[in-house]
Each structure stands twice: as structure tokens, then as C-alpha cells.
Figure 1: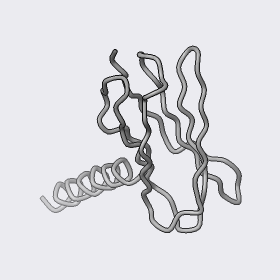
Figure 2: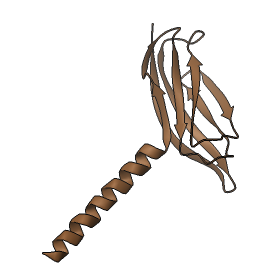
Figure 3: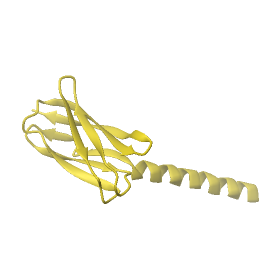
Length: 114
């Protein structure tokens, strides 16, 4: 009985740890679908105060790079206007700079409808 309780506690701890890591770092675009000309927000999490980095917004014909930092919080948010964009799906990839070099934090996408 005791070993099954220990096993259950271990499984729960691993699930919670994985959820915390997933929720604590990465990049999101909100909303994920916008009408051409609207603004969406890119949020990057998993940062340490003082860090900086960049994110790329790209599709098959366009590549844009935005740098940020140094940051004061673990998450930062940036508004992105689609006023001069073409309709389509754009991939957003976030990176952070550290003493070890550049690390990819995650990726997401936004759909821009006509």
C-alpha cells in the first residue's frame, strides 16, 4: 500500500512540474487569428530580469525580427499591428540571449485573415 502511495505522489509531482514548465516559458500570440489591419499581442515568458533576446515573425515571403530587453519581468508583451502585412499564416519564434549563447524559447503562429 505504501509503495503505491509513493508512486502516485511521484507521478503527480512529475505532472505538476511538466505543467509548470510548459506554462512558465515560451511564446504566445493572442488572439491567434486576426483580421488584416488588426493588432495582436506577442507574449514571451521564461525570462530572467536583465535578459534580452529577439523574436522572428515569418512566412514564405516575409521575415521580420524584433529585439527586446533587458527585461525587468519574467514575461514581456509586445503589440504587433498587421496593417502593412499580407493575409496568411505567420510563424513567431522567440529567442533569449544568455552567457551560454542564444536559446530558443518556443514558437507559435498567428493567422491573418483578409
